[in-house]
Amino acid sequence: MTEVEKTLLAISEFFDNLKVGYTGHSGYRKTTDLYVLAEACKELIERDLINPNRTVFLDLGAGDGRVNLFMSYLVRYSIGIELEEFIFEEYFIRRNELEKYLIDKNLIPLPENIFILNGNSLSPQTHEELFRKTALTLKEVDIFYTYITLHDAFADLIYKEGKEGALYMVYGFNSVLPRYEGFRLIEANLGLKGLIALYRKEAS
Image (cartoon, rainbow, N blue to C red):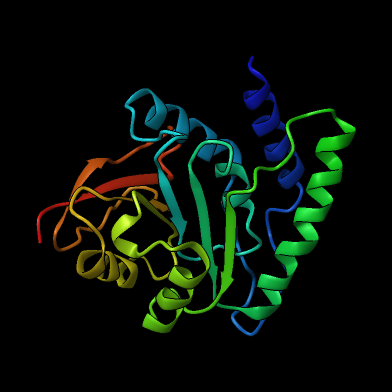
């Protein structure tokens, strides 16, 4: 097992006890199982769909940032947008805790390629802020990611603003998968467990 693999396993273990976040006005906040994401990423790396030298990753509903922290070891830029301010603030708590956890285990520290914004992923103002902070636009994102919440609205956004060939990973499905205008389903069961579906944006 490589040092990166050991580090990603440790991050998965760290967040395993934090699978449900705090409650807010929208109710309980469920989160991505990083063990499942790890298996999906192995497939994407094997297919050269994830490359640490070029891939730009964007989580459209970043929550406490766990997916971005995990993905930062595998991509060039790991970007997240979180709407709820109280959840966005939790990201900094979790990051500090994780940094100490990794130091204690003598593992690879967090990269400097993580950018988490507090804003609405569907808002042009948030996209402008993203550009100001990273010099990146939605046209430069290679992989979009979301938990199942708002998956259809995010698909519309990617269809309008994303580049041809961009990937869209949706976590949380079981058996019935939706179809999105302008997308082709390329993997219904990414990483096993039937929780992640992978789509590719076709020509607009």
